[in-house]
Amino acid sequence: MATEPLNPPQPAQGGAVAEAELDGNVVDTSAAGISPWGLARRRLKRNKVSLAFGLLFVLLVLSAIAAPFWANNVANTTPSKNNISDVITVNGEERQVVDFDGVPVGPTFQKKYFLGADGNGRDTMVRLLYGARNSLFIGITATLITLALAVILGLLAGFFRGWTDAVISRGLDVLWAFPVLLLAVALGVSLAVGGLTIPLIGVKIQSGSLWIPTLIIGVVNVVYLARPIRGQVLALREKEFVEAARAQGSGNLRIMFTELLPNLASTLLVFFPLIVANAILLEAALSFLGAGVQAPAPSWGTMISDGLNLLIGAPHLTLAPGIMLVLTVLSLNIFGEGVRDALDPRAKLKIKG
Image 1 (cartoon, rainbow, N blue to C red):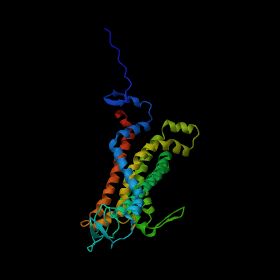
Image 2 (cartoon, rainbow, N blue to C red):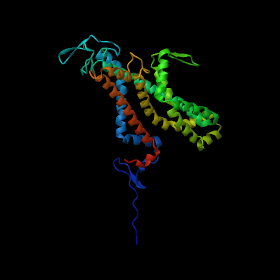
Image 3 (cartoon, rainbow, N blue to C red):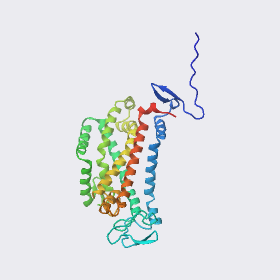
Image 4 (cartoon, one colour):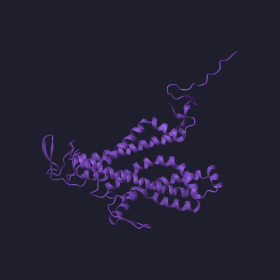
Protein backbone atom coordinates (compact mmCIF):
# COMPACT_ATOMS: atom_id res chain seq x y z
CA MET A 1 0.00 0.00 0.00
CA ALA A 2 1.52 3.30 -1.08
CA THR A 3 2.00 6.03 1.45
CA GLU A 4 2.00 9.72 0.77
CA PRO A 5 5.33 11.45 1.27
CA LEU A 6 5.55 13.79 4.19
CA ASN A 7 5.35 17.41 3.16
CA PRO A 8 8.43 19.33 4.29
CA PRO A 9 7.76 22.50 6.26
CA GLN A 10 7.17 25.41 3.93
CA PRO A 11 9.02 28.70 4.41
CA ALA A 12 7.05 31.34 6.24
CA GLN A 13 5.17 33.75 4.01
CA GLY A 14 4.67 37.48 4.52
CA GLY A 15 7.36 37.79 7.20
CA ALA A 16 5.83 35.13 9.47
CA VAL A 17 8.18 33.06 11.59
CA ALA A 18 8.32 29.33 10.96
CA GLU A 19 7.43 27.16 13.97
CA ALA A 20 7.70 23.50 14.86
CA GLU A 21 6.77 21.28 17.78
CA LEU A 22 9.50 19.73 19.94
CA ASP A 23 8.44 17.72 22.99
CA GLY A 24 5.29 19.80 23.25
CA ASN A 25 7.18 23.12 23.10
CA VAL A 26 6.86 25.69 20.35
CA VAL A 27 10.23 26.24 18.69
CA ASP A 28 11.14 29.03 16.30
CA THR A 29 12.86 27.17 13.46
CA SER A 30 13.96 30.44 11.87
CA ALA A 31 16.16 31.12 14.92
CA ALA A 32 18.77 28.65 13.70
CA GLY A 33 22.14 30.32 13.32
CA ILE A 34 21.26 33.35 15.44
CA SER A 35 23.77 34.22 18.15
CA PRO A 36 22.75 33.94 21.83
CA TRP A 37 22.74 37.74 22.07
CA GLY A 38 20.48 37.90 19.03
CA LEU A 39 18.08 35.41 20.60
CA ALA A 40 18.10 37.37 23.85
CA ARG A 41 17.31 40.56 21.97
CA ARG A 42 14.38 38.89 20.23
CA ARG A 43 13.01 37.57 23.53
CA LEU A 44 13.33 40.98 25.15
CA LYS A 45 11.55 42.68 22.24
CA ARG A 46 8.59 40.37 22.78
CA ASN A 47 8.38 41.23 26.47
CA LYS A 48 6.27 44.36 26.10
CA VAL A 49 5.80 44.88 29.84
CA SER A 50 9.54 44.84 30.48
CA LEU A 51 10.19 47.24 27.60
CA ALA A 52 7.46 49.59 28.84
CA PHE A 53 9.04 49.81 32.29
CA GLY A 54 12.47 50.22 30.69
CA LEU A 55 11.07 53.17 28.75
CA LEU A 56 9.63 54.55 31.99
CA PHE A 57 13.10 54.49 33.56
CA VAL A 58 14.53 56.28 30.52
CA LEU A 59 11.87 58.99 30.91
CA LEU A 60 12.76 59.37 34.59
CA VAL A 61 16.43 59.77 33.68
CA LEU A 62 15.56 62.37 31.02
CA SER A 63 13.46 64.30 33.53
CA ALA A 64 16.43 64.38 35.89
CA ILE A 65 18.69 65.61 33.09
CA ALA A 66 16.16 68.37 32.34
CA ALA A 67 16.22 69.64 35.94
CA PRO A 68 18.33 72.78 35.19
CA PHE A 69 16.06 73.66 32.25
CA TRP A 70 12.95 73.47 34.41
CA ALA A 71 14.57 75.41 37.25
CA ASN A 72 15.99 78.20 35.08
CA ASN A 73 13.35 78.59 32.37
CA VAL A 74 10.09 77.47 33.96
CA ALA A 75 10.18 77.84 37.74
CA ASN A 76 12.89 80.55 37.77
CA THR A 77 14.37 79.37 41.03
CA THR A 78 16.99 77.00 42.44
CA PRO A 79 16.57 73.86 44.57
CA SER A 80 18.00 75.61 47.65
CA LYS A 81 16.44 79.08 47.36
CA ASN A 82 14.06 79.91 50.22
CA ASN A 83 10.90 81.80 49.23
CA ILE A 84 9.12 81.62 52.56
CA SER A 85 7.69 85.15 52.32
CA ASP A 86 6.66 85.04 48.66
CA VAL A 87 3.08 85.42 47.47
CA ILE A 88 1.69 83.37 44.58
CA THR A 89 -1.54 83.69 42.60
CA VAL A 90 -3.51 80.46 42.33
CA ASN A 91 -6.81 80.48 40.38
CA GLY A 92 -6.96 84.26 40.69
CA GLU A 93 -6.41 84.18 44.45
CA GLU A 94 -3.26 85.42 46.14
CA ARG A 95 -1.76 83.01 48.66
CA GLN A 96 1.29 82.93 50.87
CA VAL A 97 3.83 80.35 49.79
CA VAL A 98 4.06 79.37 53.47
CA ASP A 99 1.19 80.49 55.69
CA PHE A 100 1.44 81.69 59.27
CA ASP A 101 0.94 78.16 60.57
CA GLY A 102 4.00 76.96 58.63
CA VAL A 103 1.96 74.98 56.10
CA PRO A 104 3.28 75.44 52.54
CA VAL A 105 1.16 75.85 49.43
CA GLY A 106 0.13 72.64 47.70
CA PRO A 107 0.45 71.74 44.01
CA THR A 108 -0.59 74.61 41.74
CA PHE A 109 0.04 72.80 38.42
CA GLN A 110 1.38 76.01 36.95
CA LYS A 111 4.93 77.02 36.08
CA LYS A 112 5.97 78.09 39.56
CA TYR A 113 5.34 75.70 42.44
CA PHE A 114 3.97 73.07 40.06
CA LEU A 115 4.03 70.52 42.88
CA GLY A 116 3.78 73.09 45.67
CA ALA A 117 6.44 74.24 48.12
CA ASP A 118 8.10 72.86 51.24
CA GLY A 119 8.26 74.36 54.70
CA ASN A 120 11.04 76.76 53.64
CA GLY A 121 9.23 77.94 50.53
CA ARG A 122 11.43 75.95 48.15
CA ASP A 123 9.87 74.71 44.90
CA THR A 124 9.05 71.01 45.35
CA MET A 125 9.15 70.25 41.63
CA VAL A 126 12.63 71.74 41.28
CA ARG A 127 13.89 69.86 44.32
CA LEU A 128 12.26 66.66 43.07
CA LEU A 129 14.10 66.86 39.73
CA TYR A 130 17.42 67.76 41.33
CA GLY A 131 16.85 65.03 43.89
CA ALA A 132 16.40 62.62 40.99
CA ARG A 133 19.77 63.73 39.61
CA ASN A 134 21.47 63.06 42.95
CA SER A 135 19.70 59.77 43.63
CA LEU A 136 20.31 58.42 40.12
CA PHE A 137 23.93 59.59 40.13
CA ILE A 138 24.59 57.83 43.42
CA GLY A 139 22.70 54.68 42.40
CA ILE A 140 24.35 54.25 38.99
CA THR A 141 27.86 55.28 40.07
CA ALA A 142 27.74 53.10 43.17
CA THR A 143 26.65 50.17 40.99
CA LEU A 144 29.60 50.71 38.65
CA ILE A 145 31.92 50.69 41.68
CA THR A 146 30.24 47.50 42.91
CA LEU A 147 30.66 45.84 39.52
CA ALA A 148 34.34 46.79 39.26
CA LEU A 149 35.23 45.57 42.76
CA ALA A 150 33.09 42.43 42.51
CA VAL A 151 34.56 41.43 39.14
CA ILE A 152 38.14 41.86 40.37
CA LEU A 153 37.56 40.00 43.63
CA GLY A 154 35.45 37.27 42.02
CA LEU A 155 37.98 36.67 39.25
CA LEU A 156 40.93 36.52 41.65
CA ALA A 157 39.16 34.24 44.14
CA GLY A 158 37.69 31.89 41.57
CA PHE A 159 40.70 31.67 39.27
CA PHE A 160 43.61 31.35 41.72
CA ARG A 161 41.69 29.52 44.48
CA GLY A 162 43.89 28.44 47.43
CA TRP A 163 44.94 31.11 49.90
CA THR A 164 43.82 33.90 47.55
CA ASP A 165 40.30 32.52 47.58
CA ALA A 166 40.46 31.97 51.36
CA VAL A 167 41.49 35.58 52.11
CA ILE A 168 38.94 37.15 49.76
CA SER A 169 36.12 34.84 50.83
CA ARG A 170 36.74 35.48 54.53
CA GLY A 171 36.76 39.23 53.88
CA LEU A 172 33.43 38.92 52.08
CA ASP A 173 32.13 36.88 55.02
CA VAL A 174 32.96 39.76 57.35
CA LEU A 175 30.92 42.15 55.16
CA TRP A 176 28.13 39.57 54.94
CA ALA A 177 27.96 39.33 58.74
CA PHE A 178 26.87 42.97 59.08
CA PRO A 179 23.35 44.05 58.14
CA VAL A 180 23.83 46.24 55.08
CA LEU A 181 21.79 49.18 56.32
CA LEU A 182 23.45 49.26 59.75
CA LEU A 183 26.93 49.05 58.21
CA ALA A 184 26.11 51.80 55.70
CA VAL A 185 24.62 54.03 58.43
CA ALA A 186 27.68 53.54 60.65
CA LEU A 187 30.04 54.42 57.81
CA GLY A 188 27.85 57.30 56.65
CA VAL A 189 27.65 58.92 60.09
CA SER A 190 31.38 58.57 60.73
CA LEU A 191 32.39 59.92 57.33
CA ALA A 192 29.76 62.67 57.21
CA VAL A 193 31.66 64.56 59.91
CA GLY A 194 35.31 64.33 58.96
CA GLY A 195 35.13 63.40 55.31
CA LEU A 196 37.14 60.62 53.71
CA THR A 197 40.78 60.32 52.71
CA ILE A 198 41.44 57.53 50.21
CA PRO A 199 44.77 55.85 51.02
CA LEU A 200 47.53 55.31 48.46
CA ILE A 201 46.28 58.05 46.13
CA GLY A 202 45.77 60.59 48.93
CA VAL A 203 42.45 61.96 47.63
CA LYS A 204 40.44 63.91 50.22
CA ILE A 205 36.65 63.87 49.95
CA GLN A 206 34.99 66.63 51.93
CA SER A 207 32.08 65.92 54.26
CA GLY A 208 28.73 66.46 52.55
CA SER A 209 30.04 65.30 49.16
CA LEU A 210 27.85 62.97 47.12
CA TRP A 211 30.87 60.72 46.72
CA ILE A 212 30.73 59.62 50.35
CA PRO A 213 27.35 57.81 50.13
CA THR A 214 28.30 56.67 46.63
CA LEU A 215 31.47 54.92 47.84
CA ILE A 216 29.74 53.50 50.91
CA ILE A 217 26.92 51.96 48.87
CA GLY A 218 29.34 50.74 46.22
CA VAL A 219 31.43 48.88 48.80
CA VAL A 220 28.70 47.36 50.98
CA ASN A 221 26.94 45.87 47.94
CA VAL A 222 30.06 44.09 46.66
CA VAL A 223 29.39 40.92 48.63
CA TYR A 224 26.09 40.30 46.81
CA LEU A 225 27.79 40.19 43.41
CA ALA A 226 31.30 38.92 44.17
CA ARG A 227 30.04 35.57 45.46
CA PRO A 228 28.05 34.64 42.31
CA ILE A 229 30.94 35.75 40.10
CA ARG A 230 33.39 33.65 42.12
CA GLY A 231 31.18 30.58 41.74
CA GLN A 232 30.84 31.13 38.00
CA VAL A 233 34.58 31.60 37.56
CA LEU A 234 35.25 28.38 39.49
CA ALA A 235 33.16 26.52 36.90
CA LEU A 236 34.50 28.38 33.86
CA ARG A 237 38.17 27.86 34.69
CA GLU A 238 37.75 24.12 34.15
CA LYS A 239 36.35 24.52 30.62
CA GLU A 240 38.20 23.47 27.49
CA PHE A 241 38.63 27.00 26.11
CA VAL A 242 40.65 27.95 29.19
CA GLU A 243 42.91 24.93 28.72
CA ALA A 244 43.29 25.85 25.05
CA ALA A 245 44.27 29.40 25.92
CA ARG A 246 46.77 28.15 28.46
CA ALA A 247 48.23 25.73 25.89
CA GLN A 248 48.74 28.67 23.52
CA GLY A 249 50.89 30.40 26.14
CA SER A 250 48.35 32.90 27.52
CA GLY A 251 49.15 34.22 30.99
CA ASN A 252 46.81 34.32 33.95
CA LEU A 253 45.77 37.94 33.47
CA ARG A 254 45.11 37.41 29.78
CA ILE A 255 42.97 34.35 30.49
CA MET A 256 40.99 36.16 33.18
CA PHE A 257 40.22 39.28 31.18
CA THR A 258 39.99 37.93 27.62
CA GLU A 259 38.57 34.45 28.19
CA LEU A 260 36.66 34.47 31.50
CA LEU A 261 35.42 38.06 31.72
CA PRO A 262 33.48 37.99 28.40
CA ASN A 263 31.64 34.90 29.67
CA LEU A 264 30.50 36.92 32.71
CA ALA A 265 28.91 39.62 30.56
CA SER A 266 25.39 38.19 30.68
CA THR A 267 25.56 37.80 34.47
CA LEU A 268 26.72 41.39 34.91
CA LEU A 269 24.06 42.65 32.51
CA VAL A 270 21.32 40.91 34.51
CA PHE A 271 22.61 42.15 37.85
CA PHE A 272 23.18 45.77 36.76
CA PRO A 273 19.58 47.12 36.81
CA LEU A 274 18.77 45.13 39.95
CA ILE A 275 21.77 46.50 41.84
CA VAL A 276 20.99 50.04 40.65
CA ALA A 277 17.49 49.70 42.11
CA ASN A 278 18.91 48.37 45.38
CA ALA A 279 21.50 51.18 45.51
CA ILE A 280 18.83 53.86 44.99
CA LEU A 281 16.74 52.35 47.78
CA LEU A 282 19.74 52.21 50.10
CA GLU A 283 20.64 55.82 49.31
CA ALA A 284 17.08 56.90 50.10
CA ALA A 285 17.23 55.02 53.41
CA LEU A 286 20.60 56.57 54.32
CA SER A 287 19.44 60.08 53.40
CA PHE A 288 16.19 59.56 55.32
CA LEU A 289 18.26 58.70 58.42
CA GLY A 290 20.65 61.61 57.89
CA ALA A 291 23.64 59.46 56.90
CA GLY A 292 23.45 59.97 53.12
CA VAL A 293 22.97 63.14 51.11
CA GLN A 294 23.39 66.11 53.41
CA ALA A 295 21.22 69.23 53.45
CA PRO A 296 20.65 71.49 51.63
CA ALA A 297 21.34 69.14 48.69
CA PRO A 298 18.08 67.40 47.74
CA SER A 299 17.49 63.68 47.31
CA TRP A 300 14.34 61.62 47.48
CA GLY A 301 15.31 60.30 50.90
CA THR A 302 15.89 63.75 52.42
CA MET A 303 12.67 65.07 50.86
CA ILE A 304 10.66 62.22 52.38
CA SER A 305 12.30 62.86 55.75
CA ASP A 306 11.54 66.60 55.59
CA GLY A 307 7.95 65.96 54.51
CA LEU A 308 7.10 63.74 57.47
CA ASN A 309 6.89 66.79 59.74
CA LEU A 310 4.10 68.19 57.55
CA LEU A 311 2.49 64.92 56.50
CA ILE A 312 -1.05 65.99 57.50
CA GLY A 313 -1.06 69.58 56.19
CA ALA A 314 1.17 69.04 53.14
CA PRO A 315 1.16 65.36 52.09
CA HIS A 316 2.59 66.27 48.67
CA LEU A 317 6.01 66.72 50.27
CA THR A 318 6.16 63.00 51.03
CA LEU A 319 4.04 61.62 48.21
CA ALA A 320 5.97 63.26 45.34
CA PRO A 321 9.42 61.83 46.16
CA GLY A 322 7.87 58.58 47.38
CA ILE A 323 6.07 58.00 44.09
CA MET A 324 9.21 58.84 42.11
CA LEU A 325 11.21 56.39 44.22
CA VAL A 326 8.65 53.61 43.78
CA LEU A 327 8.40 54.14 40.02
CA THR A 328 12.17 54.13 39.60
CA VAL A 329 12.77 50.98 41.64
CA LEU A 330 9.76 49.22 40.11
CA SER A 331 10.84 50.03 36.54
CA LEU A 332 14.39 48.82 37.16
CA ASN A 333 13.26 45.59 38.82
CA ILE A 334 10.74 44.68 36.12
CA PHE A 335 13.15 45.56 33.31
CA GLY A 336 15.89 43.60 35.07
CA GLU A 337 13.59 40.58 35.31
CA GLY A 338 12.89 40.89 31.59
CA VAL A 339 16.60 40.99 30.80
CA ARG A 340 17.16 37.93 32.98
CA ASP A 341 14.41 36.00 31.20
CA ALA A 342 15.76 37.04 27.81
CA LEU A 343 19.27 35.81 28.66
CA ASP A 344 18.07 32.56 30.27
CA PRO A 345 19.18 29.68 28.03
CA ARG A 346 16.31 27.56 29.33
CA ALA A 347 13.88 29.95 27.63
CA LYS A 348 15.07 29.07 24.11
CA LEU A 349 12.19 26.65 23.50
CA LYS A 350 9.64 29.38 24.17
CA ILE A 351 10.51 31.44 21.12
CA LYS A 352 7.55 32.18 18.88
CA GLY A 353 6.89 34.63 16.08
